[in-house]
Image 1 (cartoon, rainbow, N blue to C red):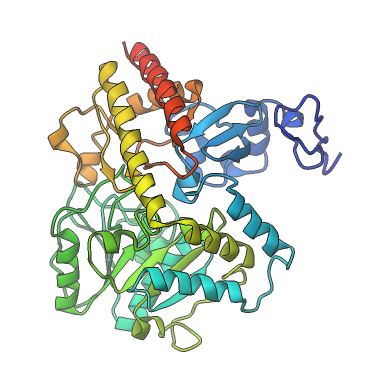
Image 2: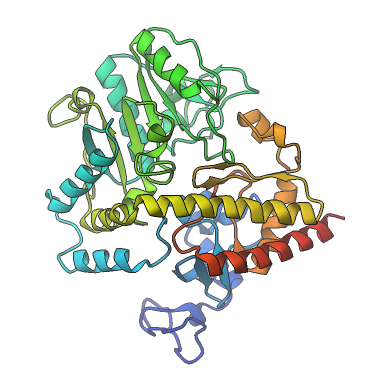
Length: 453
């Protein structure tokens, strides 16, 4: 026993290679029992709200372990994973180079509260690959990165106003949790309980893919250069270039939120793909190799407004954590041009698999692809109606998605438990996995079509 939890029985445990002191899968029983237990100590039973399956219904599975493109729950069920920790995992779960890097780092200690060579090297690796990032500050999450970038932009410009886009998600920081209304610019409308009107009073929410006319009190425009939180929506031709020109016209800063697209679309992220240079860039996910991390990079003159050089405060006990920086360095070093070419091909293959299955079973759907990102919109078969903004994305059939989600889970495919998340493939999704995925997806769509009648 440890903390009242019985050790696992390695004979009965469904987890291969069970270590009875570490693995407690069999002892926890079913997903339903374990999740109910979680609800007694964790609000909603989860530590990130989407994991609760509220949008799709049902009870979440609890992951015992993962390898490559697969996750295994505590009941021993195996799923081909298209979540990949919402894009944070790109080389595949438990990739040998990542695990070796973490193992080597942990033997040196887990946190020091002092500078380390690894954080310097990771900052160098980001700067070398993303020319707009002349200086880089590491932190602990994508949310911390976006909130720091906004604070930095306001401190550097001396202005208050912030412009965001309806349907973009920039993490759980108050000023960025403003909601837009029906495609019309909305000022000062909190997007969640707990955010007072004053917190978003200087946040203007405008439609995505439309260049707003800025005023000279705007500190910054923050945008997902490829919107990946309302499915996957590509920037319209001229949109990012127009934002750059409009920011320059009024002296505002342009912030790219590349927490998802950074090092996912290629070594230079979306800004390299679309050849638009922002003033500041927010990173997360891939740069931590699956461990918690965030970063802000940008022009030297702006970045040096951060403390200790400037008056814009930033600090963090675990910022530049030696385990996360070791994992991140390993990930970036493994992501060669050939790897990105292969990931792009696999993303297109995934979209084709989904498209064929949906057509075979009469389920109208669209599966847009931007680089290595795949979106899913159910309920529309008009290829000329691929969403360009949040209002158009919201026309997806959420109840149909919920049925497909559970049919896919039964067939052994893990999708995100929400209709507006991107689908992710990684290095672990090799040809054999993609072949098996095709078979399972066909079963899922067949079952979904059956339940829709």
